[in-house]
Length: 336
Image (cartoon, rainbow, N blue to C red; front, side, top):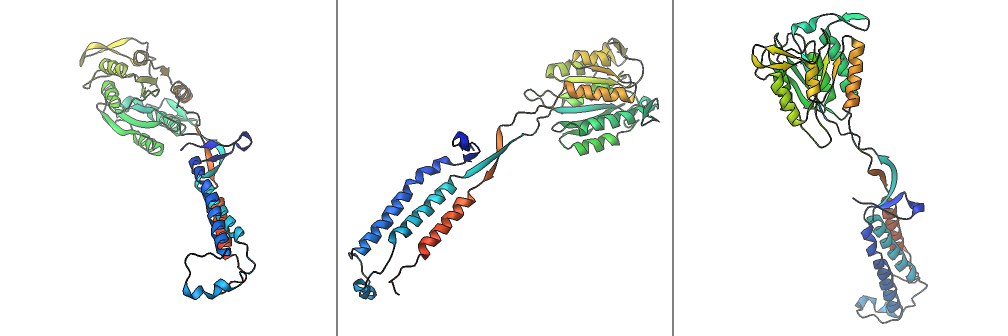
């Protein structure tokens, strides 16, 4: 609802229904009608006289103030018009909720992710355990984004479709474990599965984050090359984080299950306009997650409205009080 400000010195006061002020002239009409009735009664020219009131016609009118009651009734109506105009006191600007994108993490759950060649809090830890801790922190610090979790080994499966429930996303992330879906990577199947779940919105491109030790596919129904081509067509960026092994060089490798050469983790990120990270320790993984957050930021639109404190109760109550005073005003010289 549009709010119309008054003057610069009253910039904080606004009206939700300024059109209600067109009813204010009716207050003058109410006052005029009341004064007209009182004057006609005082002139002794009643048009309809009840038989029981015949004696009162010859009685002294006494000391009365008919104008006060009419003016109070008109003022009460004016107060109600002000209340109908919905006065509001504008406060601070309200920050709209962040507009996040779809972020799907693809976890390599093959047996090689069980190697305890990383350290977490000063102790040896599995590769997959460190990945889960680092990405869980990334999820908690990204309000407004939708997070999904996909695990892949010999098969690819959705642990959680993209959702705004970050707490549930962390819980499902922690439930992933090595050898969950058998051994043997099928990264192409995982990427294609993620592409069917994300949604593309204006200025909000979805993001896929792949955590793997080498990213080499050994089978599946969709090759990494086909999945990359589909991601490029949909405008989805793929960020790859290699957590062990020898750093990828951006070349191709051959898989007996697929005829064409397949891109490695570095090539997948480059072809989809993402970025490749080699994170062989926990600190490098944390820096990679922070870099991904900067490269794919959550949009925070500027505030467009201000908080409003309704003030209609004051003129509404004042109108009721004025009407009570107008009705309860004593008239001297009158009798039952």
